[in-house]
Image (tube, rainbow, N blue to C red):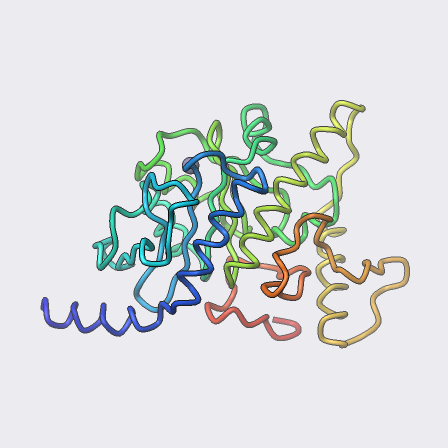
Length: 274
Ligand SMILES: [Zn+2]
């Protein structure tokens, strides 16, 4: 019934706060400064209840205001309020459907795009890869905005918190917009490291068990469960590489959140051992 749908939309709308809108605009502007998305490319969203708040289509980031953020109903992609939502709305919705992420950042970052043309998967050349759930897969090319691109991105995301789109860009997910953005930065940084390593020779990569050990050590540090294994002590900043920190005032604790595809929507870290 239309009345029911309106009521549901109203309830969901209350969950999208002014801070959510301001955060989307702030991180959208930062994407250009951080060389993650030139021009009007890239887009960001957060999920709140039955609604997704997403950046508008084709609007220069410097002109964007919190009032321009579009609200889209997750159940049927209907526009609830705002101007024209991002053309990648289907892809954001597909990723939310395939995960428990509460925020998504879509970038056109140059090293990731360059490597997307020659790789099927970005290998683990640094232990920071643990924060992305493991080597990040490359989804096959499909035109922007299509259901095909949305479906293949969602499929390749499985068990990861990021996915690369061939000849296009990448998406990073998280329990908060800050964490999703941090992961987008981490992914581009890892692509740069891999690029340089390949220029220098044949890179050694980390095994799945080595990444799992990093995840366990970071979790132990976070919860004070137990001392990390000898010889596997991560630096105080966790696994996030330099340059991946969110702006002052928005910085969440960094570190790994394994199985981010199953992260709780609230943004709370999973309990130890989960
Ligand atoms: Zn794009």
